[in-house]
Structure formats: structure tokens, C-alpha cells
Length: 419
Image (cartoon, rainbow, N blue to C red; front, side):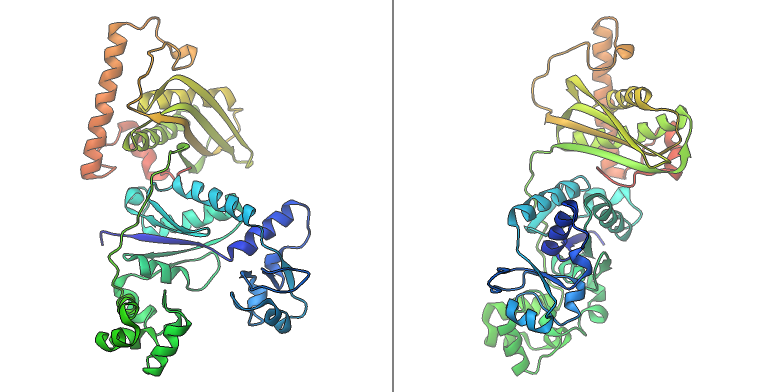
């Protein structure tokens, strides 16, 4: 199966984000844990429900219904007004985090997007494993939950993300639609609104399976081109691609949780070398160089520390990033056992930008005595080596060429997420 697409959807986005904001300001009530909605005007009680908590859903409250109806269903309902500035900021935080996993993201609304799995397939054992890591990272770092649908078609990924919530991963591949999607009410089909549902019910089409097996020409005669689209969706037909708009990257990084706590520099250096290879490869793939490198440590006490260094000459060379990361590690490590390691690059510039040769790209202990022809030649050789390795890995996979020192480490400590 060549194409794999994720649909990532925030669970009750507006309510979750408002709940987090209130908790941050000192509230002892979590809107997500009580019957609560976002929408309308608190004083006048008008407008519609924009988002609802799970306890509110238990009262039969649905998104889009008038607030007065929701109040009748649940008299003790808590009503919170929307804060669209907050939602925009939270959306940006989410997209920034997700872009660290994959550069190919299509944002379709403030709280949902599609992600192409292809660029990261070699970093994870399966799409499901990657999706679980992503959703857990969102929950742990940003404080709210997402559902992730996985499929070989965008529309099916969207449908899968709407399955049971919250904080879950679901698959809906083309070969699964008969079992997982066809039994569902036709009203749950993506793009099938109230008017379309009424028309289909008149045709005795009650489930998505009924629609998929119906005569396309009859459906099209009653619903025109939209009917044809619904029929295709019911049959899992959707050839659209993830449409990404490349934004200027603010940083590229990678981190990994170690299978065993590291207590010696030799082990740490092996892990940092693996991370440096990953980060430098992604920089080169995006035609970027980094002007700043930072190293992150999480100890087994869960304390986090990091240190960063500005480079006088931006780079995407594996060896330079690795040596800088090691030097930063040496400066901040207090010999407490290490649980997690990370390398992050920032201050990115295009690799076509002219650069000034300098003696100060590395810490003092790593600088050559003078910029001799020999050292410049060595740098160019390393650039050519990196390019050759990138070409081999692109054609034959990430594990086609592995440094001897990393063979043992890769069996136990693979990067768990991009950051």
C-alpha cells in the first residue's frame, strides 16, 4: 500500500482550548469534565453550540443546535463564550508541532489537517505506531487530545478520525470500508448534509452501504453532481492528494527516549550521532542550513535541561551538527542518568545563501588552528559524502547505509518523534 494519509482532528477543539485557558488562569473547574458548551452569548442565551463536552453530549446536545435548546436539555449546562484569538493561537501551536513530524501537511480548518505519512514511513514500525506517538505527543506537550484517522484515501481518513472519541487512532483502508463504514447511517458520510440525507431517505437509502450499492445515475439524477460525489465517497473513491503549502521552517529537530537510561558519554554520543544524522538529512532534504544547534536532555528524574549555540556559519553537515551537540551535552550534563536526548536546529536559511567561511563554527576545542586548504577540502569531502549517503538512502531506504558505531544502538534506541 503506497499512499498512507493521516487525518488529525482535535477533540472538541474550542471547548478543550477554552478549558485549558481557564485552568491556566487558576480555575479549579475543567470544562471538559462537566456538562459545558462553547457558543453564543452568556447573558442573552442566543446563538448556536460551537463545541460540547462529553458530559454535555450525554444529554443529547449536538453541535450546531440553538443554545436555548441545549439549555432545555441540561438546565445546569455551563456556557462559555468563544475566544477566536485563543483558538487561532492554539491551532498554530498544533500545526507547528505536527510539522516537526512531517513537512507534508494540509490544514483544512482551525482544528484539523491531513498529513502525508510517506516522508516519515522509515522512522516508524507502522502507520498506527506513528499515529499513536503523534497523538500522545500532542496530549503530553499541548494538553489537549486529537483523534487520528489512517487510510489510503483522504475521505476515508476523515471518516476514520470521526469514529469513537477521544484520544484514539482508527484505520479505514479501502479494503475495510464494507465492514467499518457501510453499516453506518448515511448521515455520517462526509459531505452528506441534512438536505441530502432527506433526499436519500426518500430513495430508501439509509446506510452508507445502501448508497454505495445504489445506481449512481439515480442518485445523480436527484442530487446532481453532489450526488455523484457522495456515491464515490461511499465507495471509497477519492484520488485527491495532500496539498501542502511549504512554510518557512522555524526549526528541524529529532529526539528519542532511550530503552535504558544512559550513564556514560559513549552511549550518549552514539545516540546523538544517530539524531544528528536524522536532523542533518532533513535539513538537506529541505535545502536548509541551520544557524543554531541545541541539545536537550531529560533525566530519569524527568527534569529537562537544554543548551544552544549559535554557529557563525550555518550548516547541514552531519559531523558539524554532531560535534556541536556533543559539546553542548558535555557543558550541561550533571552525570544524572539520561532518559531522553534531542537535537534541534533553528535559525534556518536556504542552502543557496552565500556564507562567510569562519573559524568559529564549532566550540573552541574543536576549531582548527587555521583555515588551511586541507581543512576546507575535508569539509567539501564531508559534504559530498553526506550527499552520497542521502542518495543511497533515498533509493534503498534509511537502513541501506548505517555507521558501524550505530548498528547496536539502532536496535534499541530509534527516534520516537520529530521535534
